[in-house]
Amino acid sequence: MKRELIPIILLICYVIGETYKLIFSKNRELFNLLPIILTAIGGILSIIMYVINNYNAFYIADFLQALQIGMISGASSTGVNQIIKKIILLQGGKNDIKK
Image 1 (cartoon, one colour):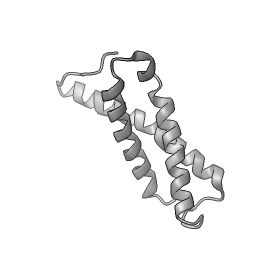
Image 2: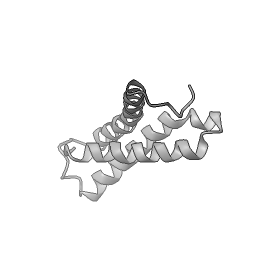
Image 3: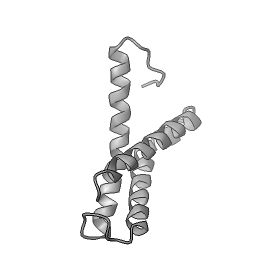
């Protein structure tokens, strides 16, 4: 996969995750599904990008590798969220999300 597409998938998943958290923050059962949902969205986005680019713009061998890269990028967006939360806490900010 082109290197510039991986951060795009991660960024899109991050924004979707933040929106999802705003909508479902009161429903804890749906809120806990966020990593699974972002992993699936990342996989779907990667497949769409793979198909749109006529299967030849990526540096990967097949459809399954595109799916794997997208799923890892989607799951990584939850890790990026945790890093941002920890940086805010270290700088003395308050955390809006309850543990």
